[in-house]
Image 1 (cartoon, rainbow, N blue to C red):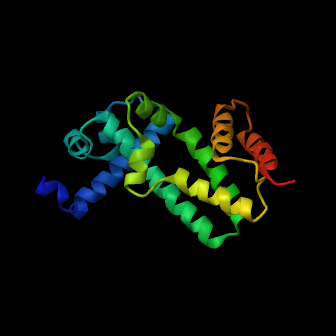
Image 2 (cartoon, rainbow, N blue to C red):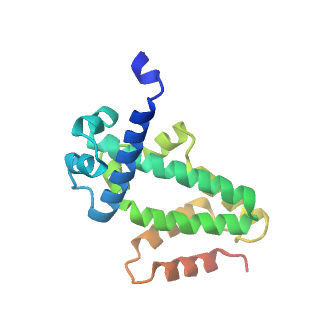
Length: 184
């Protein structure tokens, strides 16, 4: 076991890591995945070596960005569940996931192409958003807000359809799908 890897990061190292993650997420979302690591380092105000110490490969940086986003989404899902009725929580999370998926689709595709199992990695660090969405779906169905015939597989297919939508107003297609999910 690597003792150095098990120690918590110093405050400055933690700040640098967060700055790199934030910068990489913004750059990948705005400019795509071809932006070189040295450019991400420059924009984050750190050296390339700092990025490499935290993220030895570009794929590990992709994964960290996605897992960071999933952590934020998991916390958001937990807050929605705690503060709202099941229908509101479910539809708010479903909508947010589609918007997030659109913004980070390239990262997910790059990781899938490299053989990275995002679902397994997310479950390992307790940021499995799919599990939370599945739970909220069940709760919304028990509350009578979502059609009981809708399965989680249906929901995943509908999400993929929303992500494939290329029209000018994605909110409109999300609204149409959400209307179709509601109980009659």
